[in-house]
Image 1 (cartoon, protein in one colour):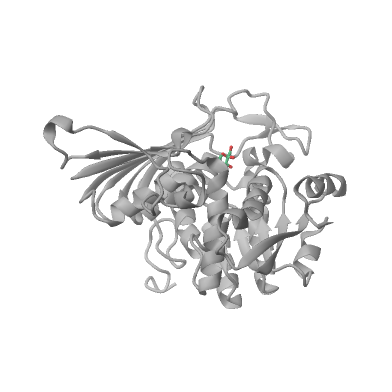
Image 2 (cartoon, rainbow, N blue to C red):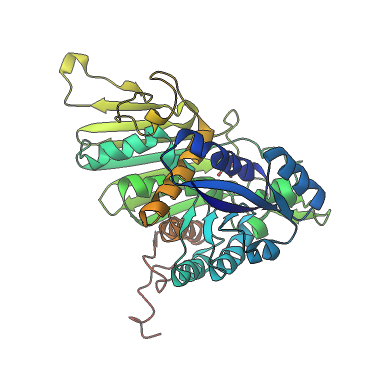
Length: 398
Ligand code: SOE
């Protein structure tokens, strides 16, 4: 088996989910030819990063990400830093010829995303972004049902991602634990952190989004910044809702907030087609709700499919326990690693790659622009189209 030496940069919550994925993958996907090796982990505090390395059995540590990238014994760089470091690290890693696994969202904005794509494509390095919810077996099965044409024409796509952890105005912004509340580190609030997941899944299941009309709100306007020790304005969106049109003619409705008291991480989506509907809920992630209008009338109703069967019908489940026994959140990351390695071994693109994730980035950008300008925005299909939805620069003679 071929070792694939991983260099992890950042070791917070996502560092743990990814590390667990690397450690478990060969136990459950024995056909893979590569074995991830936890070669080095990097963080600014030597003491803290060493504690993480000891707990997760990384072979070595670095305190400067440039030193990690410069090492000959690192094959793949995993970026788990706050969002404002993604671009710089990814571009340097690509230039050093490393494979890259980058946390979501891809970047702070589409301009950064475009530079990251140029770097990985020029270097020809395998790249992926950890939109992990695609790999929940029930979500993958939703994709299969849609691709089989079972829904017929799709009319509606509805998604929510609701949390409640920032309601208190005593929660500070910035620093290792709370960078998600600091616009300089995160780029945006719930739009890039939570809606980005919903948008990635939506595009994967239902195709591209054409245009959006959004509203955002920042309920707590000032928070103490852990780095300056002062009260600073809050620059992120605490809540966001948007309407959209998909290319396939269906209508989308998305909502995300960190102010939905009682909800810790409620990610749900529902798709309504002419023949059937599908519903999924992260807190019941092993179930897929399915309504089929072709069922016999007196038995017609929503079925709750426990996506745990073997025999190849329920994605990924042959790899785990026995039918009827479910898996959870952490397995989505194991599946992501497995699919990444499979792509690598087949000489194919890993998905979602930077280019796929850039489509989500562009939707997020259009959402934020729409909210601030209070009007509908086209989602720019490529680099040359600006977020006003104007045509490519070269067509406008600029
Ligand atoms: C935020 O609380 C967060 O951890 C996101 O950053 C993750 O991407 C999401 O999956 C769960 O919530």
